[in-house]
Amino acid sequence: MKKMMEACEGFFNMSEEEKKEFQGSRDVLDPINWGTNFNCNTVGKKFLIWRQFLKLYVHPQFNSPYKPLGFSEVAEEYCKRTREICRVLMRAMSETLGLKPDCLEKATNWDEGFYLLASNYYPTCPDPDQVIGLPPHTDSGLMNLLVQNDVGGLQILHKSGKWVQWKAMPNTIIVDLGDQMQILTNDLYKSVTHRAVVNNKSTRISIVSGHGPAVNAKVVPIPELLEALGQAPAYPGIPYNEYLQLQRTSHSFLKSTLDIIRLES
Image 1 (cartoon, helix red, strand yellow):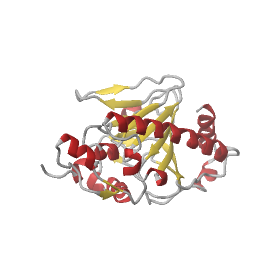
Image 2 (cartoon, rainbow, N blue to C red):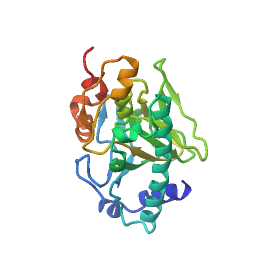
Image 3 (cartoon, rainbow, N blue to C red):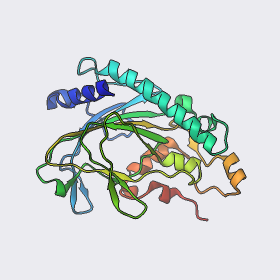
């Protein structure tokens, strides 16, 4: 975790010209994508997004920038280890649902699962009340593992409707569930609405291991689970790559993509 954080910091500290070598297009499936949101996007009419990001698709095929020196090797080892953590958690969750340990893996074609490694860089901001690091959202995949430096900024939407600041604790992996897990479990497990805020004192860096189904996997509520609970499916089958594209459209901006596809009861 420490080496990965240092590697990401090293990348963001490179010159703008060096980082632009890895600038992607607007395609959500770009294998390597560096970019910035500084002052380029309004959220409602009040906030501006304030961050740099580096996104790498690292499974089933590993992709990485070749700079800075040593970044690729550290990232590959980090991804290998975090993927194993996710597998253990997936199997435990499957058992909590009364299913076989590998049921969630089979339902999402886990061996070909889509793994996005994303690092976010939130520099100090002179007027933090007028910007946001990331607007409120849920993650598209199955499960995210997040680590951060010692600067807080992650906020979780509590069921009361209030935003709760997650204290930055050393050597901690934060696990949050995504939309595909909510689809699979027919709302038994919920994806987590969260956002990132910035400050005027310290730079925050976060690293997100985003684990999803295979890109062409059509994720549906697990039939054995529906049968055991006597429930009708709340969601239709939609291939994961189509879900990713839908989440990026203006139609779903600042809205729940799950609510857009939800079947009427």
